[in-house]
Every structure is written in C-alpha cells, then in structure tokens.
Image: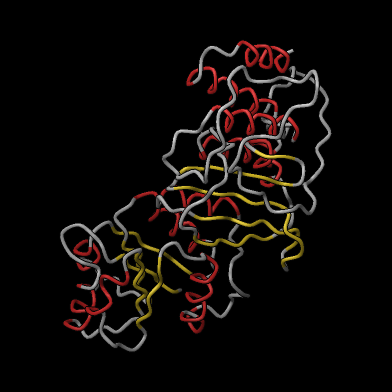
Length: 333
C-alpha cells in the first residue's frame, strides 16, 4: 500500500485530488489543510509520497522538506503551485523532488504517482483514466481557466467536445449537436472516450452555460445511473419522447467577436443595432448583439433553454426592444 499525503488548503481541490488518487490501485491518500497537520503524523504514518501546495496558510509547503530531514525521511515530493516562478529560487536541488504548475493535467500527475509507487503496488495495471467530472471539479474549485477536450475513444480518436472553464466558472460547452448545458450532458453521457486538459490565459468565447457546474454534474450522474431518462436540459414537456444521439466529431468553436450577420427579410431585427465589439475580456459586459448572437447560436444548436436565457438577459440589460420579447414568446411556444 502506498501512502500519499495531499497538503492543500482549498478543501474542494484537496478532496478532488484525494478522490482521484483513491482510484489508483494500492494507493491510500491522506489530506491536510496545513503543513503542521501533516508534520504531526509524519512519524506515526510515514508517507511514500507527498503532494503539497506551496502557498499555504501559516507555513510554506517548502517547510515539509526540513521536517522530513529532521526525521530522517526521504519520500518523493511533488510541489504544486500556480506561482512556481515566485518560489523558483527557494526550491532546492533534491532527489525525488519535482514541480508541477497549476493548472495541470491530472493524468500526468497520476502517472507520476504510479511510477513512484510502482514497487509498493504490484497489482497496479496502469494509470487511472480521469474523466470530464474530475477535470471540471479541479478546475472550478481551483478557480482556473482551462479547456477540457473530449475525444471519442480511450485512445484519443476524434475530438467530439470542448468545455471551457473561466476563472473557476463553467463558461462554454460545445459538441457537434450544439452548445450549452445540453452539450455538457451529452458529453457526460458518453460511455467511452478520453479527455485532456489545457491551461488558458483567457477566452474570447461567448458564455453559453449559466447553470452551476455541480448541479450539472449531479444531473449527469442521474442520467448515467438511470434515475433520469432525458439527457436534454432544455424545456421538454413531461413524458415527451426524446432520442439521444451521442455527439460526433465537430469543428472547434469560433470566438464570438463581432455583431451577427444581417438578418434575412422578415427576420427579427434590432431597432438600434449595437456597434461591433472586439474580443471580450472575462469581466466585460456583453453588448446587445453579443446576447442575440449567443441566442441565435443556441437556438440553431437546439439548446432552447439557453437561447431563452440569453434573450432574457438581453431584456434585463437592454430594455426597450419588443422584438426580443416576441422571440422569447415564440421559443416558449
């Protein structure tokens, strides 16, 4: 049995790492919010590996190295931080010491854990495959900005979906059938596939998911377990029949950075069109055209509930456009 310490003051992120490590055969993980809490059990429960954040309350994560030396212990240590460069000059050269920058690929970390603990767990048959839920939880609880790419089979295959988290907020989801909450549930219902996580500095994609990430995960779990039968999150009459088709390959989404194209004759038009806008920062207030473009895209993708949400937001921030109300009434039937 390989014992791994996880020293991380963010409870959700700590629990997420413990959950992921617990899926590895032969691994037991203990979580600590402070360095001193881990120091108190070093002698009674010596670890085989330590994962520690650097920026911690009361004591820096680097302090664990001196505590290990005082007790004659020398387990491998992984220093995890979003501020590695700030600590670089203080990180010593040490056997078994590696660094990992946040946000990180969880599978890379788990493969390292299994490599380090290989002799302690002979029954292990390879790294655990972390999925969409694990990456999403770590990104949201850690307030990261990342993209999570979903592929068609465990070996990679074709790209079938993209999930963007902006500053810990579930921001954008798209698959080949559409976008928004419906797209997330379709991706979550894939029985086979793999995921990869890449860090982002920012995104220019228009937000199309407004539900809390944990509520969507709960909904997806219910779908997987069979306690819910309709994978669509939008507005559907109770008992209505819905045929779920897994998403196929799709083209990566294009950032919404300009006004929508001119409408065809007879289509909905604005009384006072807004000017074109540049790429949106994550904290920028969307323009009226941004809301309408997002609603159009959501409706085209079949995500009716998301389209209605965009239009209702537009009416709140940009009142005085009765055409938008007519659009909402049409979508609601």
